[in-house]
Structure formats: C-alpha cells, structure tokens
Length: 403
Image (cartoon, rainbow, N blue to C red; front, side, top):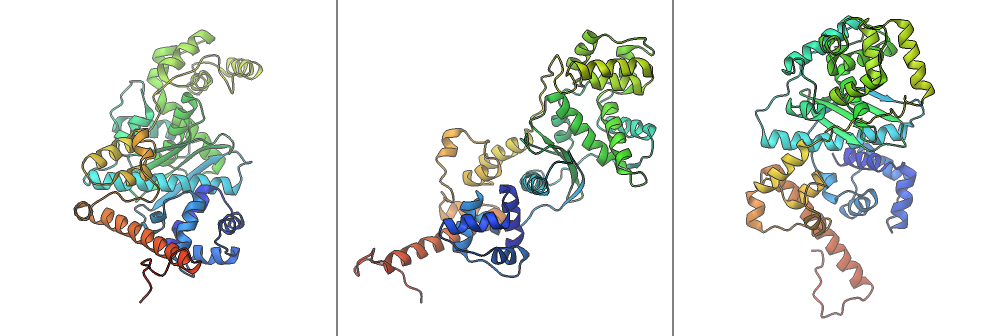
C-alpha cells in the first residue's frame, strides 16, 4: 500500500526518482535513488519521519501514504499527440487515479446502492456499428433526439466519473477506463474549448461502448470519432436541421448549429458528409476553407457550455455536512470545495476533532484520522528529541524518552 502510494504521489508531482531524492536531500532527508526505488517496489518500509518529509516534497498530506486504495482502474484508451512524454502520460494517469478514488469512495459511502448505467460494449468494425452503439447509449440514457445540454452532467447522472485536468503543455486529449469494473471513467483536458471538450468526452464514451479488438488502432480512433458525432447529433437530428440532401452549407448556418448542439462547425461538416447530406466535393471545399482561415484551431464563434464536473464537489459538501468526513479530509478530496476562508484555516496535517467526534466517524475515516495523528505524534517526538540533543531544552524541561 505505502509503496504504491509513494509512486503515485511522485508521478502526480511529475518528478523522476532522481529529482525526488534531490529535493529530499535539500530538505535534510538524504536518500539514494536506489533506496527510493526500493521503497516504491515494496522491498522496504520507510519510516514515518521520511514519509512526513516526502509528503512535503510531493505536495500531499502525510496520511495519503497510509490510505487503502478504494478503486481498481482498468485503463482502456489514452489519446494524445506522439510528442507527449511517458512522464507526462504517467502524471495524467496518476492524477486521474487519485481523483477517481475520491469519487468512488464518496459514491460508495453516500450511495451504496447506486449503479452505473452503461450498456455492455458491442463488437464494432464499421461506421454503421459506431452509429448503432451511439444510438443504443442515447436510448439507454433516455436522451431521444434532444441536444445534450451538458455531457459532463449526463455522464455523472448516469453513475459515470468525469475528470478534467489543465494540460496545455502536455499534448493530452483524453483517457477512459472503468473503475472497480462498474464505473465508466472519462478524463479530458480542461484547457480545450467547450465544444472540443464535449467531443472528446463523447469520443472516450465510444471507446467504452465499442469492442474494437478486431480492427487496427487507427480504425478504432476513426470509429470513436464517428460515435462521438452520432452521439452528439443523431442522424435524424442532423437531417432535421440540414435536410436530407444539400448542395452547399452556409457558414452562418453552421455557427447557429454549433451554439445549439455543442458540436463544432467542422464537426457539423463531417457529420453532413458522413450522412451523405453533402457530397465529397463540397466537403473538401469547406475543409480547405477551415484550414486556410485558421478555423481548425479557433472557429469564428465559440460555444459556451456547462462542462464542469460537479458531482465530486456536491458529494464532498454533503459528506462534511453529515459528519462522514472531516473538513481536513474534504480539503484533500476536493481542494476547491470548501469556502476559501475555511480552507485557509486548515493547517496541513492538522486534526481538529475530539475523541468523541473521532469515534463517531465511519471505520475507514476513523482509521485514517488516527493514522494521521500517529504520524504527527512521531514527528513531534522526533523533533523534541533532536532539540534535546542540541541543548534546546534544559534538564528541567520534560522530554519523553523511549522506554
């Protein structure tokens, strides 16, 4: 447990083994790269004092190393540019795993009988299969032909988990998987515009809804894109908005459709071509226009949606209100959940509870609080012993000595 947590915290910080030991050494805790590697492999157990120093270096709370994992995650697809480094990929996965664990723990604590609503994946080899998978998920979720106002809210309401991280400099697009074989997990880059973020989330749903093991990875990506377009704008909706057959599409018309359905203007061009509403010649004409105008990256009109995850914050606030977790724990699970003044009053590693309050906590939370208190006690004991060794206390000062 401790070894896995040490490695996860280091990856979340984006540090190598060497960089981590350098920072430990600068903080007065010399350790070799081989020694840290041994701890991370579980070949040896670090002392509490080292964990406390490591927590400071890695920017986590000390008790993080003692927490039992609450989720097992099977990652299915990771989408990024080829230039993204392995370290950056590892950091995104570690951050996602940490966020998913918080969601799963809160969800199973507050809603123990809730189930995720995601159909089993279908075997997919063609674009027709992708369309069929998208239609099946819309039916399952009761969306009919209505525009999806917030895809994030829709996924969360169906028991899924959505994580967003600012990753402007990492070339990261999306990641998906399943937690505890029950909860669909979708991770996207929050630095993308809302329309691209929606398409990316729908794309990751496509990976979850389609079994593409029989086709090459590049073909799977194409089918996931087709799924995303079909999920956001079903065939009947596209033909209702555009007509069954068109000679040309108007740019102003595409702007209006983007603001209504949250699919990019270029996404609408692709959708019209996929459904044979426009021919190949007009598709290429429009595509060249988007390239020459620089609209592939920044379209002439923005879509402003409601694509921010809310479920974690809502569950964290409820858990604090009902006394299921401490405010300190809430700050660790969801740093932006509590009001700023309340967050500021929480000193790192502090436990603000009476013994009676601790005993009223659920068993897992009670164990976590007690473990945190034990780490703090050892640190205070070691600090006092070090001060005594340097004459900081007189002989009359009471100092605990080991038995």
